[in-house]
Image (cartoon, rainbow, N blue to C red; front, side, top):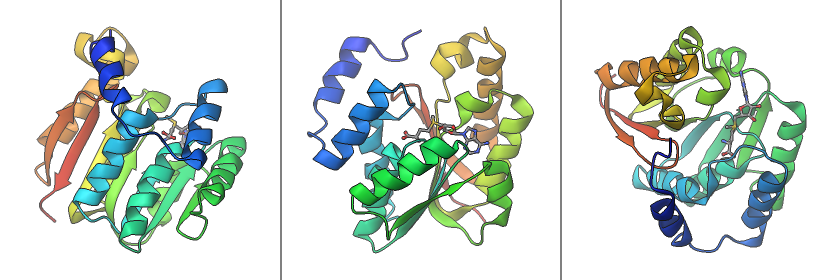
Length: 215
Ligand SMILES: C[S@@+](CC[C@H](N)C(=O)[O-])C[C@H]1O[C@@H](n2cnc3c(N)ncnc32)[C@H](O)[C@@H]1O
């Protein structure tokens, strides 16, 4: 199921300004090598969300080759801030580090290699924006619930939590697959959490955007 009419999606994507050579190269390589990435429409939206809350500290869970990390780290840089990402796959992790360096972000952003479930409990403090891009990779209700708890507690009051792919190709709506039903449970969990005010945006595969309003 297309979440957004493909012509509408293509129209608004064409309105995203041309990417600079460093970001454009990561985008092209990800497309050619079938590496998952948020793409320009959502990348620019993430940049915008980070700028809107003046994010200085950004956490990314699921970095692949660093495409979304570049958008987010550039927003953090505007405030003299930093980004920490994480990536399980060692090849993608190495490529992400190279791509961030090519984009001039080596001193601002670093990607930790390893399993988010092991890394998250070891991190100190809270972040102004936490972006989670693992929903399709997990597809399991208990793991998604655990991931939500680990990430929600890392968001500063006044900060944003963004979960990508929450519509799961429409399967969260139809309930036709286990992954879709797991995404639906995650969405209900986020929507009912009183620490956050949440909206579900139909950008690409769906983004849950939650502002932390209570401690
Ligand atoms: C959708 S991709 C991330 C795309 C990236 N955010 C972007 O737009 O450029 C999800 C990534 O999470 C990684 N991943 C899967 N399970 C993970 C885990 N348990 N911990 C850390 N990373 C994981 C995958 O290897 C994959 O590269």
